[in-house]
Image (cartoon, rainbow, N blue to C red; front, side):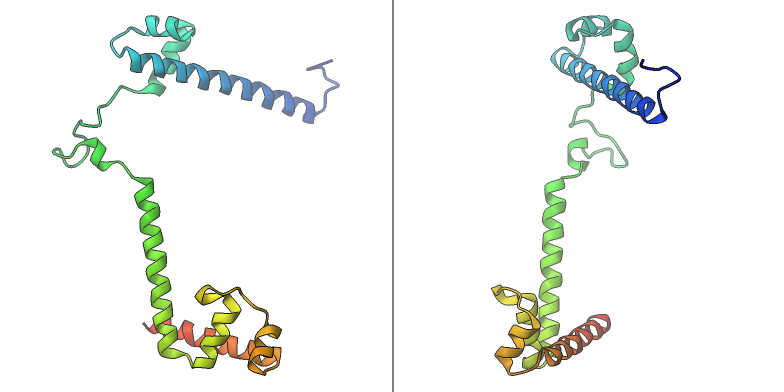
Length: 172
């Protein structure tokens, strides 16, 4: 029998989670319907909006603060009174593009330091090991066979090259 003293804590937790999920889903749905109705008719009263959205009027009043007042993107808000709100909102695509530019710039910097600090052999080992220059990354053994070295010697060259890069990047 549900909710009896015989139910373990796990059953009660699952029941509570399910009920909370249902309530949250209902509130989210009701909030979405109210928002849509308010966008369609911003001057309508909450009672009218609630009726159109199929929500109890009391529930609509409780949800109203979550919607906040409608704000135009042309409104001037914030520290600069002459700047419209739409100009101050974050552009996630621009942030991602900037991150890509910074990563590419750091990669270019790393390649310049590698060209300046590493011997041709060390550079070749890192290129092959990490798949730089459009090639697939290769194992120590594969690189060793190509260069006529043991895998252990390739690992030593890799470590020395990485240590040189770290030191140069810190100093740079």
